Amino acid sequence: MIFYHKFEVRWSDLDANKHLANSSYVQYCAQSRMAFMTKEKMGVTQLSRWGIGPVIMHERYSFFKEIYADQTVIVSLEIDGCSEDSSIYRFVHKFYTPDGVHCATAEATGVWIDMMLRKMTTPPDDVVEAMNKYKSPETIVMTREDFKKLPFSPDNVDPAEFTK
Image (cartoon, rainbow, N blue to C red; front, top):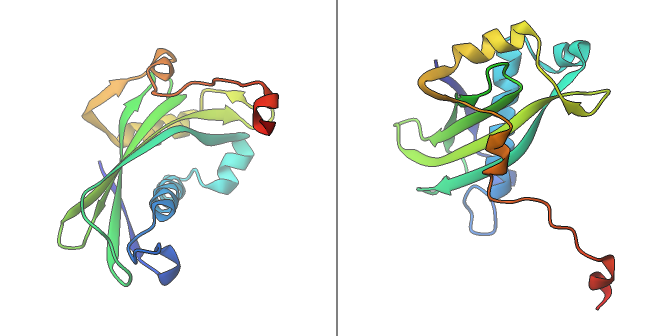
């Protein structure tokens, strides 16, 4: 299954070039994920009861066609990667105009965390069932090793570098 969420592009969603701002793409993806979770009975209230939360660890975008003010944009959500216990997931979002023109694609990799321990956790069975509905035959099985393949990793510096 594919989940779709519709947005009306507002003036405040634009950048200086008068098209949808990069930050708005991030916000639209996040809101699409929350709408998906609410539809699947795992909204903010339920997540609080379970003591878990979704955390995005890596996000990337490709842009194909501009989106302007007063346009309608439809953002899809599919799960194209997931660990066997659903503790790790990867969402793919596609941005479309109402006539089906594909404007952008986003990929967001994340984990579920225990809100008290602040550590990765396995979500409840209800979450696993809901996520399974949005997998496709091409959905890959992910593991912690997939985080090592992400393009960036921490690289601390000496704070004295900031004052040079």
